[in-house]
Image 1 (cartoon, rainbow over the protein chains, first blue to last red):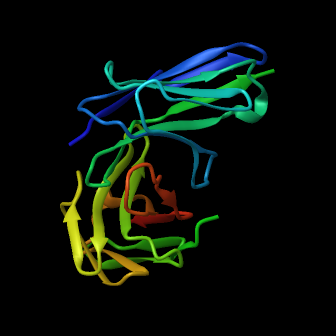
Image 2: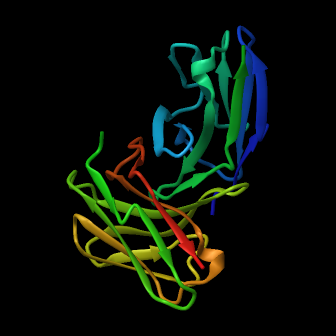
Length: 110
Length: 113
């Protein structure tokens, strides 16, 4: 069973600042996913990372994967209020089971 | 949006009663999952299915059972609801193969009183 750990659990950042969310996982996996969840809503897929060194970017968010370190990062550049949400990383195994971290609650302050 | 419908969306039930939650998909995806979401725990896998009548346990399966008699439907049953099963339940689907992410339904908020 995959164990996925995220940190920090809570993140309060000022608009315009940069920050990184970290996601570590316990066993070999080359399938890493990032999701966003707004309060009271479902989860929305942001990124799919499938190989060592993979990097994906969308707007102010950039995700990367280092399979050797079992680490993925979600970097936020010049944060804006609209990015306030909870972000989850998940890893999957060859059995197509998805294991999630506890989430990072991001609040962007004007 | 992926065609996933959960029903009911909200339910209040009494301790000790059986409860069934339904997940219906229109995507013909092979895999279906039930998760529960609780503060401080993220999403935890309850059960999943890899085909009609093919199911397996996840991390937190005690007190839950599932059935999948058709590709499009995946039912989660709480055999005798307890207050610890108060949670938000999400259904998800995924196609087979590497790199296919899971898509989530809107969730069911269940309160056991």
